[in-house]
Image 1 (cartoon, one colour):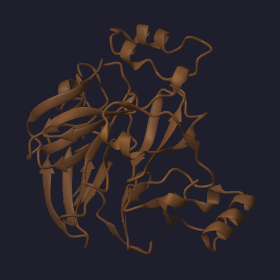
Image 2 (cartoon, helix red, strand yellow):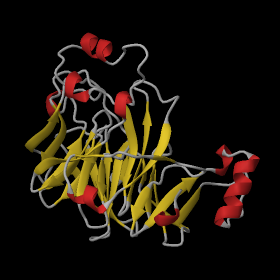
Image 3 (cartoon, rainbow, N blue to C red):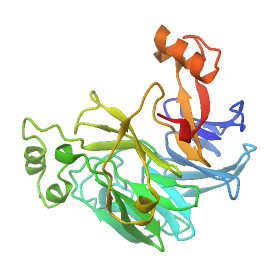
Length: 314
């Protein structure tokens, strides 16, 4: 299990039992080092890890022994990526999708680009939006399920896209009823003022931000919050039926609130992986955690990697 600890700018390797093995790479400006990680991807089929450092536009490739294989300089800034047989899918490129300013959004046209293998050329662009749309950097934009299918989601969109044959295909529609962000309308607006007016009607609290998306064989987990605020966020686990898995653009009709555990960081082969921070739990939560999952811990403990059977999540 490979985990990106973004606040600590660190990539950590664990074994199948959850035991920490080593850190991959280190912060710095030299070869094999990174200044600010925006995303990390592990490819089990090749046993390689790729890390993108934003300030230098540098993609670093390591093996699981921590050895640097090579580095590639990109012509593009981006927040998330995934390497497929079609090239590099990247999310959140900046002005005109070129190497100018890092946090200036003027001129940006697409949320999703397909780049060449050398990260020098944009082959295709998808999910066009106005330059005043915010970007999210939660490292959950690209997901691969147990069947090896690749999906993309942008935090302020209601749609999960399937990436196949160099195309982004609408696959799931996330519906929050009357609290759903009116995406079909706001993408037609031309100014930030119109945008703010459209999503601030007063009484309606739009579930405008969707993040921490994880796709399993039988479930999807996600977090959602009101547009422009993380204060009222909620964790949701959606049960997926076989019909939903094969039908495009399907409305999800039921959700179940998460319980003691946070949203999983990963689903794989009917198992869900959670990062537990005992320091953030009260005594009752710690007691429940230890009783239900047979863990010995206390509120001074380090982070815990918890692996459970996803069929038992309630």
